Image (cartoon, rainbow, N blue to C red; front, side, top):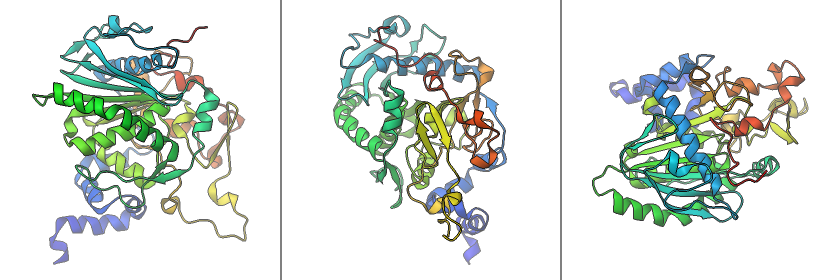
Length: 395
């Protein structure tokens, strides 16, 4: 009788094969993985397989990078002018976009909300935005020391609305600072977004595009999960982050990857997480890493921290406060000084453990080849199809 239920059969078999995965995934999510053939393809590609993105995705990423960079035009000394004028050529590149709202309430999270009210040709690429699109774009900090400081914060419990998404579960935890910034941002922008949806989504065709760079990317991810949960129509929302740090523990990250379709073909994913080669921020926060100026000292593995007479801690799966890398990665495989990668240098990494991607840039201590593995440049954190973060900066 027990094996007459196909879901239960799959669950029993996979519990034996993948016990560590189950610890961070609910039964319903795990069954969903089992029913998704792409999930098994990912396991096969987990080593070193990479796939160049299509030309359309390559073009779209250039457009999204420009829209994200425009968020840096919002500060305590600078702003975007209506209808959509800024120091980065907003109206010339995006003639059909109209500013709805912009906000700045501290030096960590700021951004803007804009509307493209019909299919919009983009003048700096041949890409287009879909028919009516609500754009939410968030910036991060401009200072490398500030970024590193902001990343040194403990976790807090995360509970989703559980309205249109399954519960994340009792063990989900996220970065406390990102979560507080998310709550503050949501409080500021939610009335604007709700009004825009009421006014412009009368035919049910309004797309929502949420984007962010650096710390803004972390907040953008939490916002996207909120609106997926509250609005319910998953086909209408797209999340794009660049240089986004880690956000939560294994339980949260596995849940978020599942809700954002990280295991689907890249064209079908709700989430594109873009990482430049050598961008250490995309691997932080991490208790295995300590930051000293612009060098990263890779500390000993967890077991090596404890003296021989003390038992090592349980596996990382059971540690609620270890940050987990997302499986969803689009990797820019070129020098930190190259702000204009060619199409073949922009690849889909399939999984977080792919050694040809960010995992290979910052290997475990046992795999380090020498002191050169310690040195990183903050330039990588700014090199996302353009040099991010300089709107309004007078040099």
